Image (cartoon, rainbow, N blue to C red):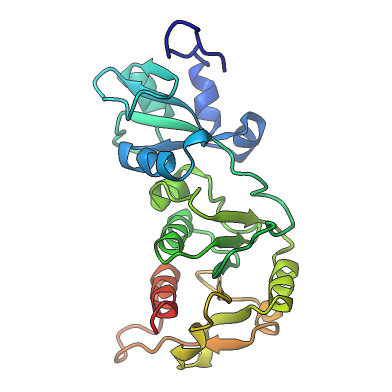
Length: 258
């Protein structure tokens, strides 16, 4: 994308280019994804200001700030690009985070880490990333059967937090988990067959919390690796278990309690 030298208006890409970013193939080819809505864009600008390539908005929507190249589109064009039923009128084109599809950990893994095995609903994946960021987790490992964290619905559910922590979406997730365990991380699995002992979540900043598929839970292969299996107790007989996003939120909250 080129920027005119005398103002901040971008030489426009065709509308179909923006639409292509709804697909993984399009995102990989362009090296970019879309973030929609002023609040989410401000979150991205706060955590990774250099990642924003361009702001796309309608004439009626006020662009957030004035430091990025700007592309005005019609409401009809915005409807074509937006992934929501009611477009908010402002979309940011954002660079793909570094090494998101790599099979190795970052040099600095930080503190607590979330591991998602085959969580397929993009709303759940986005919500869990947002929750992990809210409770100061450093990163999220996802299997390649998880919903893509940069798909439109994931990004929308994450509310702009997808660049607030590191992400790895890879088929080698068990190798990464084993490497983290060798570094002193405690692998705790949320599992209906586990014990009701939430103290296992308090591992300092060395917790690797594993959450499984919405229907079948965690695989036997991953469960065999775990240090602890945790079951969150529910009240009465009205529900056997919790939604994976709700379970993850409770576990991450409890991990921060002294």
